[in-house]
Image (cartoon, rainbow, N blue to C red):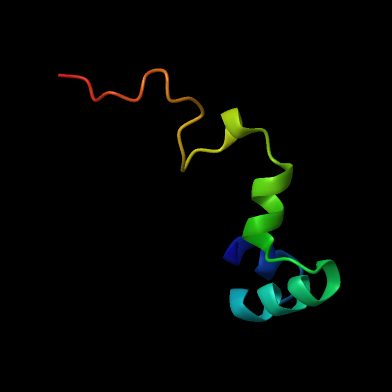
Length: 55
């Protein structure tokens, strides 16, 4: 998020988050999670079918 904040001229991501929440009524993370395709999100599993660890 720091890169996005910097791209739009915000000095830090905390300020960007506050402005984003004021404008959209939700945090950037919550917005991203609600609009993203689950298969494209890297930080959480897209499916629990293969959630076992490999040996």
